Length: 198
Image (cartoon, rainbow, N blue to C red; front, side):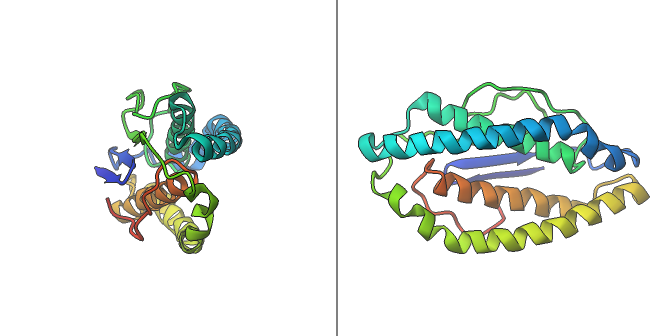
């Protein structure tokens, strides 16, 4: 079980390491509908973030329905990615409930983002610049994640179990990415730590 609560964002993953050996060969294919939807939701998130930019500048807040919709896009993405990478066997639901707190409809994964009552109105103008070092780290983590996924897939095909180390790394890498995105995406004013741990 891996749980993280850092600043505003929390990521949870809890699943049996045993996975049918054939699953990594086809599970990515079964995940395509979810990945297409997650991609579309990512585009929607970009538009919602632009609206958030304006609302934070003028009101120091993100309207709660807007914030909940953005949180839902991250949650859907997290569920789709976990399934596509064969981190567990259960097919994720097509769930679109806008909420900052996790709805609990998927038993292996959870993602929640705490709603801030107030945000600094000027930070949206320079957060992207402060996040540049994190983007460099994210490129390195993306490359390392490819290695971790290959290690995990080969291990499942040979042993029927997803090894703990690459799975923990992949969850940590997503956690790191989420922290950076919630900061640069105007959902929190707290600068993310340079850490994969919870």
